[in-house]
Length: 160
Image (cartoon, rainbow, N blue to C red):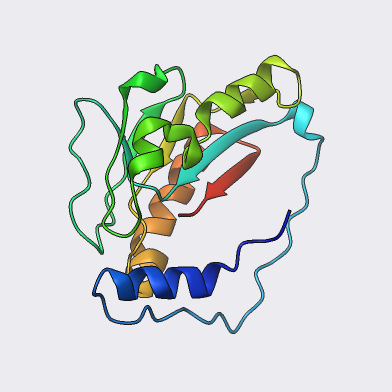
C-alpha cells in the first residue's frame, strides 16, 4: 500500500472548493518523544478526530475555524453518528462514520484484547482551522485537559 500524499491532496481539495491556499504550520521545535510506559493491551485509549463527527441531537459543526468540541460517548450506536465538514466529500463518512471516526474498530480491538479499554467519551472537532494560534492556545489545551480528566494512557489522533 502506498502512503497518501497528504499535503498536495489537501491543497488541491481547498483549491477545488474555491478557498485560498492552505498555509501549513511549520513547527520549529521537535515535539518531545513520549514512549508508552506499558503495552497497548494495558492501555485505556482516547480519541480526537477532526472529521466533523457529531451525535444525533448535538449541534452540527458549521464553519471553518470552528474550534468547538463534541463529546461522543464510546458506547454510542454508530447509527447515531452524523458528519459535517466544509472541506471534504462527506459521502463515505455519512455512509460509515468509521472512515473518519474508527469507533467500531477500536471497540473490536478492546474485545480482542489488543487494548485494555476506551475512555468513556471521545472528542471530535472540525478540521480546517486556519488559526494555528487558536489551535495552540484554545483547542489543544481543552483536549489535553479532557484526556487528563479521562485518565487515558494514549490518544489516537485521526486527522481529515
